[in-house]
Length: 347
Image (tube, rainbow, N blue to C red):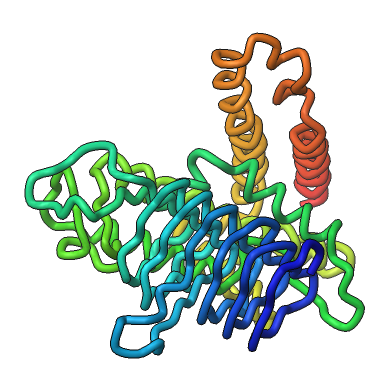
């Protein structure tokens, strides 16, 4: 607690601080940002890695009958300025989702990772005006800068001495949620302009446009493959380092006792057309290029908007191409691509 923050009947995890505002009857996991005046009551947030912005009211635990309602925020969820979150709600299967500024969210369960929940841009016939618009996988399609920067930010800010963390966003549990979300989007039998929870389970008290459904399917699929191909690269490196080159040829088709690799291997069996290891590594190099490009593009949007509004914006803000994190992303990308070229030369 830095600036008179109030914490009662609550537990705070490592690297979590409450600078101002109130936290009551809650469990906050690691790396929860709570820097300004806001309210959080009856929240079970063991995964942490999220943010509570100024003016957020996350505490409607009283139904007028009894104060017995609760919230499960989920890993990496960002509550924007002035949001109002009604209870009970469960966002644990929608990790790394963002509730945009001013959103009033009804009690609900969300099951689409990396979503943006925003105020409705229009009123649609048959849809409650209290519903918000959801864009599943929005952080993957439009805001990769934030996701990748969070990974690095948490690594650098970690001060825990007795607790270890897996800072990777794309982990088996998260990827399984992505697979489930994508499959539900693919199961649509009647294409519509707009969908609600009556059409697709897990949309909560929100509507989704067809354009968003198609973009989400593509994004989920891309990053499911990307996660699995990262595992392929790791296993090829391990086998070459241990002098077991002969085991590489059937690496994708052969079951493994390495639990994470087995998870990744099964995904590759499903998502790729064949078992060619070299082809998979080449695909990873191409995908990494797109990831880096998307990181830079998501930052460029800020540049374009800022320059339209503030006359000297570009004078005091480094452009995306000169942003320290973007530059580091490209360095890491070239490093990975060089590593892949070296691996291919040894196969």
